[in-house]
Image 1 (cartoon, one colour):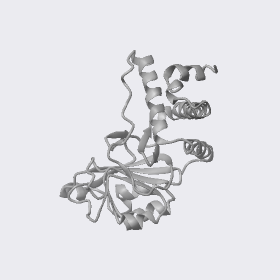
Image 2 (tube, rainbow, N blue to C red; image 1 turned 90 degrees about the vertical axis):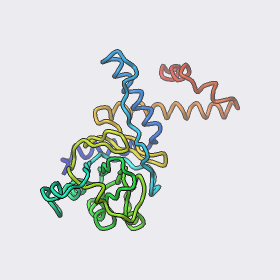
Image 3 (cartoon, rainbow, N blue to C red; image 1 turned 120 degrees about the horizontal axis):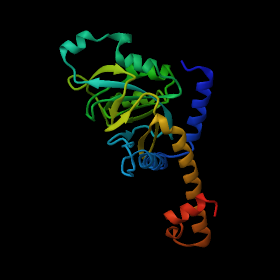
Image 4 (cartoon, rainbow, N blue to C red; image 1 turned 90 degrees about the horizontal axis):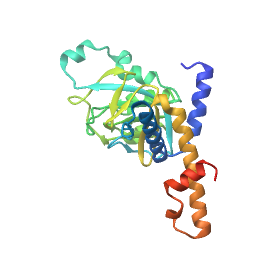
Length: 248
């Protein structure tokens, strides 16, 4: 488990990100990475994909924020299954057991939105460990029962089927692809009604600072437009944002 100073810091980060929304955070990631790309490579087009494709909010429990724990799936085959640990030592149970209230479990189903990654009994482990949420580009079994556990759920779909012959848990807490997006352990995951965004761990604080300031500026612009009864286009532009940033 986390030592206290790290846990306190992560709690503070989560609390601050919960004041934001996925769309604003996506813009923050884009802005920060474009700037870094320009500084490091003299290229402004090199920002990475951070919004998960075809991963949908199944529970609508407000904004989900947590640090990623991951599970990688592979296509099942008899020899692979036979050589892997089973039961509580299997990759899926190790991944779930590594979670706590600061974490979101992200499960790679290889983009197969119909493939089952688990259901009621398996995901009881996330409830026991107080995980903040579950994200997968696969499908959830027993969704109504799993929803009762209280954590947020984002998935490609729901199903009554099982994972085999499509996916099999292979490895825990390694870099994975989910929703065509890279997720590394300890990246920050934020999800709401508009979907799931992955904040790379090395820019979490910069994105938080940018997104918090941007939200403040947008609220100022909206209030000014309402009070003056003018189009938001008068202020919602790069020139006015630059003036606000400079304190004008």
